[in-house]
Image (tube, rainbow, N blue to C red; front, side, top):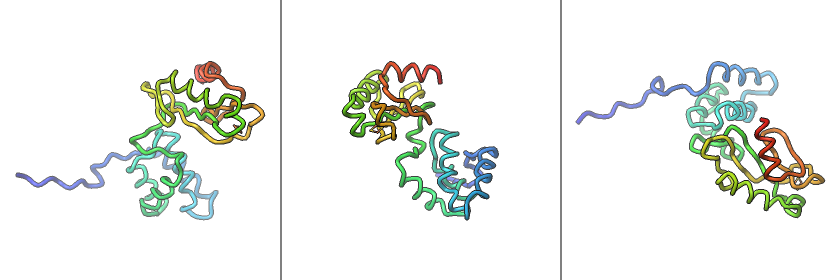
Length: 169
Ligand code: FES
């Protein structure tokens, strides 16, 4: 029986396009050193590829002159980032479940969206369009219950209103 050929670096397909690498390099002048670019780099990669894979971690580390474990440590500290086994959908929807929103129907809204999209919090719809999450206070308590759709916070939400916002996105 023939021994398996060891995987060489050049056999692994690169994850970061030259454009993504350029975006990360463009952050360098804004920070005191390359290590400080770890979080911006993770955001750039996740925004573009909907997760940060092990290979992406290795490539980020190479750009920042760090050990991949250092990038992985930073990434795994924040629940915000997703690995390749749990990629984000096209849209990420956060339902606030802190006190003001909870008292004004936030938990029911979360349950309604779970049922409507057939997911549990943290999961992505089968068509890959929506990842549903629960979040803590979004800072717009006077508009409870609030929902963050991608980057935008929306007050006084119902499941139907969330659907309408997503249809327009
Ligand atoms: S409690 Fe939901 S926005 Fe503050």
